[in-house]
Image (cartoon, rainbow, N blue to C red):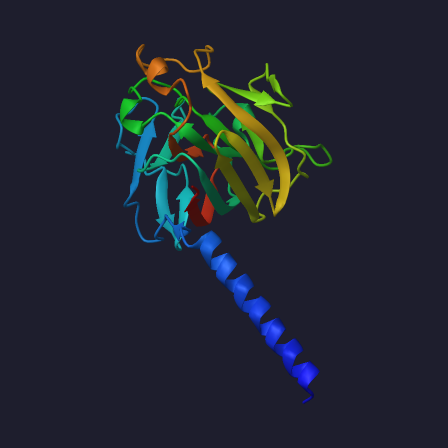
Length: 262
């Protein structure tokens, strides 16, 4: 081998090693926060039930996945449910795969067909009253196709009790659609949520589909049954909890990885 080739090989090896070190530095905080065996480290809160109660086995572990199902439900009865990771977060990257499946629970609201999501910057689960319908939070909304040929993007934003800035203005509506394509049920989709110093990036299958900024929490009529003092406690939306949602459509989640950012 010539001297020039030796130098080139050495340089290439050094670059690869440097790239590997950089990637390791960037991802050394990443961890799987769902162990695939049980719900240790997670707290459930369901409308009409006390924190920690899930009498109808809404959230369960199946084949190593976090699964949401309604086999034990006679009717939905507005039992909107959320499974909270038990640690508050400020700046983070959350990635996971999801798949809508099975039959929609007919007694759930029609808008909840193939509809789920991940709440973030949420109030603590132990501050949510038994008869509070939604946590004060921002939602990374997940949807699937409802009618063939009709657009129904996923990776959207909804805001129960919260406000956001979109394109430098306070956004006036409850939900904001993303630029994603429409995906059918029974297909695995990768989702990524990045929250960093109030800036939010939402990705679907590796593509950025929505960007906005966190504003503040305030009463909006969507959240009901809450304690009066909670609004001041969570107003700044600087820190909060993440929670996987149940609204009436069976869904699986897997490969749930969290990286805390500085």
